[in-house]
Amino acid sequence: MNTPVIIRADIEQLLAATGEDPVLYLKAGPDDEGGELEPDVWVSAYVHHSKVIVHRHEVVDALGDDPDADDVDDYVEQLQPAVEEVAAGLE
Image (cartoon, rainbow, N blue to C red; front, side):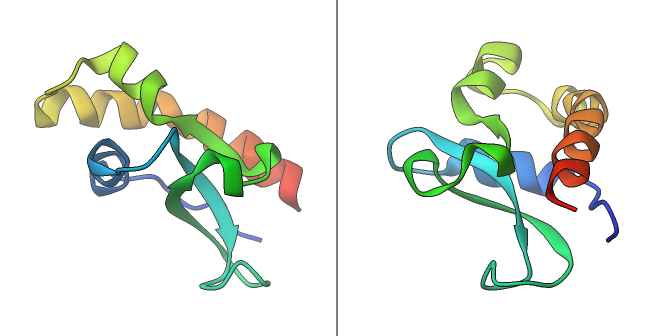
């Protein structure tokens, strides 16, 4: 299984998410029923903790409420090892 690469748009989607405690997580295929891993955003209560890459509040703590594109890009690079760790646990 290939490890997905997180991009700025994934973090921006997480920051824009509504609901209680949204997370960026890895799902297996479009319906999370098998297939290639891909990032998605959903409420943490509905996502198994082993699939979670980062919670929205962790990103806000690291970047503030209104980060610029360069800050988000830097954060994405720092987040990639966590993505690889989560992906390895799902294989």
